[in-house]
Amino acid sequence: RPELSGDFAALMEWADAIRRMKVRANAETPADARVARGFGAEGIGLCRTEHMFFDEGRIVAVREMILADTENERREALAKLLPMQRADFVELFEIMRGLPVTIRLLDPPLHEFLPKTDSEIADVSAAMGVPAARLRDRAEALHEFNPMLGHRGCRLAVSFPEIYEMQCRAIFEAAVAVGRKSGETIVAEVMVPLVGLKSELDWVKARIDAVAAAVAKETGVAVPYHVGTMIELPRAAIVAASIAESAEFFSFGTNDLTQTTFGLSRDDASKFLGAYLKGGLVEHDPFTTLDTEGVGALMDIAVERGRKGRADLKIGICGEHGGDPASIRFCETIGLDYVSCSPFRVPIARLAAAQAALIGKK
Ligand code: PEP
Ligand code: MG
Image 1 (tube, helix red, strand yellow):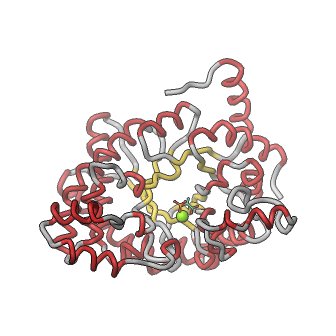
Image 2 (cartoon, rainbow, N blue to C red):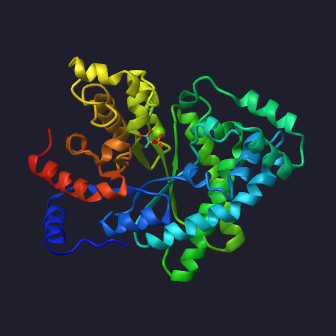
Image 3 (tube, helix red, strand yellow):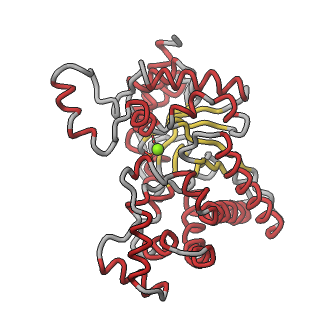
């Protein structure tokens, strides 16, 4: 794992003595987690579990899970994924030992999981023992015109609760295993994506609590855990006080919050943003540098209202902006507790957070 040394390490230590905000990393692979730790990340702020599912050895089981017609079929596919997901979390907890790890429950744009070719359908058909035609119909039924604003995040869990139940079981069982081996208590941080309604978070939280209780009963170990939510929809920012009653932490998903505030597809913006930049209509690409006037105003509202709902609410950011110095400066002014960015940006974020602390609050 990379280590900072010499003058670079000394400079980073000076920055650390000044900064107020913590710096975490977005990581889901062991390699990224090691880089993050080596660069001084103080935890994982976002583990995107959907990235784990594209692995060649499991994508067929993932497609089985998505294309299942019945809960039973879905549970069969999930039973294949559980040991792999548990092993993912064991490895991350081990690498990050002593530091917090925030695991975000599945948030795929569904179209990325759907089979596209005949041979992909044939693989799933063979694994499930069902006709390819049935799978094709099911894939057709799940097709969306606007997947980034569709059947994603907690919406997927409301349709198919077994998916999050499997993931939570994997998280808690991994925490028990690593805790037993190391003799340390592993605290799990579980994050729910794309929440816009308090009822969505409550619905998912009830299932997280039930799985935690079941694993505690089976293993005799009650894993301490925190449940939080992404804030990535304008509605979530506006109703933050009530959402905070059910969330112990917030993490701003500013990639989606930028998309949803501007009504601008994050997948298509590059096709026309260039003309806006060239014409001087915008100063920055809002997906790179936070639009403080619009998106930032919603964040400010969410921080203020969220802390009204829960005084000790922990708040961070895990969108791309969490590694951008100008955006980090804004995060300091609205009083965030931490930023989370890609592993190679951690040193820059440490410096930017120190500079922001020196400049001070708004
Ligand atoms: C975000 O929306 O800012 C975020 C971190 O989640 P993702 O990019 O995975 O949608
Ligand atoms: Mg998001």
